Image 1 (cartoon, rainbow, N blue to C red):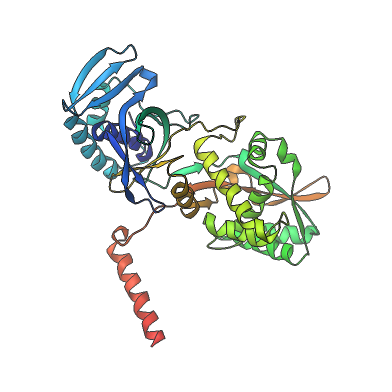
Image 2 (spheres, one colour):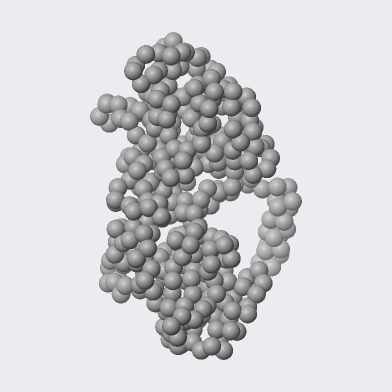
Length: 391
């Protein structure tokens, strides 16, 4: 087994939850609250068995789908292995790496591989005790980890390109814009285009030929106008610096109001649809597959924090905190231009077009303890300069 930090985090979560036999709920800032979901069973469907923690006996039963106990292990073993695994994942070097003792333990549990298929939205299945109705429920969850790079929610591909038609521009302007280069070329190029758009010099519309793509058909299942909303967000993101945060971009969408909604409804309408989209790409939709409008993840989101704590946003009971968490901690990114073929203006049938690519990921939480000594000194200097200027 040779995985990256995010993939090893799935194995860590699997082992930790079996040993803990419960998972605490999280608030909108990913802080633990005084409520938890009691875990009765942890499933691994591909090997046709589940794992049941018997707290009275202090053991974990490994049970076949026929109900017969295959073997037992001490519950404390799972806690020990997960603690060691956390340290190994944090210290892992390279894009992918091995953790031999963790692999041996997973083999002992009956697994010769662990990584979930990229085609699946659900990473783990749990039977939890629903304390509101005092009944067990079997639910699936998506796992995201802060131990490695911020996890991607929507991976970039040519399928996630938005094609724009631009009118009112001439060939000389196109050549000049395409010649812009350097580290900030996208922001510089599209800021010029966006300014022309705002002044009425350019007319920019989302090309409807995009709607034939599977991804855009899926978007229109959420709301028929969702592609237009996302198109504006993309145009603003690529044309403005420091504009990657979903909350800020949604606020700009509300302000621009491209659908000409009444002031009394626009904030709720735009925000709800953008949040519905984010939840859908976490829990249901794949860009290249026809979507039936249903969530594939029925339980919610499990997040592995940097300190190894695993917290839960239940899709039903924690809906408000989940929505606020996603709204405040989701960002857009600009992936490789050459790989995904976007960012330049081109001519087709005597008209000019350009593609912008949509990629979305979580932003990591930063607190004071995450900063290096060097960064802390820089912050102290900036604060000192600020106070001197103020005085």
